[in-house]
Image (cartoon, rainbow, N blue to C red):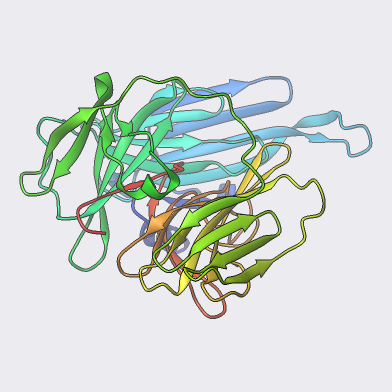
Length: 390
């Protein structure tokens, strides 16, 4: 009965966002019977990692990936590792689709690519030995010249994955019931460079040879629309302390400690005040007004020991900042507003703590108390673009 309950939980957990597999943190006594297809291991003096792939014995079409990490204890006084290797993490992941057993295709200490016999692919990534591993599905490989029948609208999500840091573009279609379906991945594709932050949501697809494409939803084909110009990335510079953003109703001036709305008649209203202190390296790098003109979608970047990115909602008439996904511990990057008044957001998290949102593309709605959100696509992605109506 216990084993049946465990397997039922695995299937139930697979019902998260598109591309999210089920995961359980296992005790040895909980482990179901597994049919092993391949194993991969790595170790040094202080750490041992074992990755096992195959299918569940009770459901041979359900692929699994078992991640096991053992490490020595760290002495809090000296910081040195001591004692014998002991189990630190054991995670069992299963695919949301019954596509058959998984086999390890490529592996390194931090990333593993697994695939079924018919090319259905998934990825496991580990940030650090202390973080939780993250499992997500790429689906089947798509042929750019013969796409499957696609719905009228959807999102394209760029990912870079595996030990070789291969790039691919996930195609996720939106159905009539407002659900999302993963159709698979286009290898070697990405999104075109954005001309400006306001253009994030409507970028064309970037294919091999710098070719730019749009998706023709009538024929489910890629239509070439141009070529991306060659260009070298300019040296990174800290953005200026204040930035100006234009919207239909006002011009917004976003500075480190304030956001002001400047109306057409020249009058000015302060929508937000905060105190980062003198010399703070915080900048507003995205601002967009919602379709109903009631809410601002914002991104604030803080530059200290790397870059911390956080998306917010702010009432257009002024008020308090509201994190778009999770809380201040979740890094998030707004992509843009959808026509229904929700926002598309990319969130990054190692999900080490219970309740922390997993990495992926979210749909978020502003609310009177807190924002609500739902995971659309599980992936380590920081961008997305629409095809068809949003």
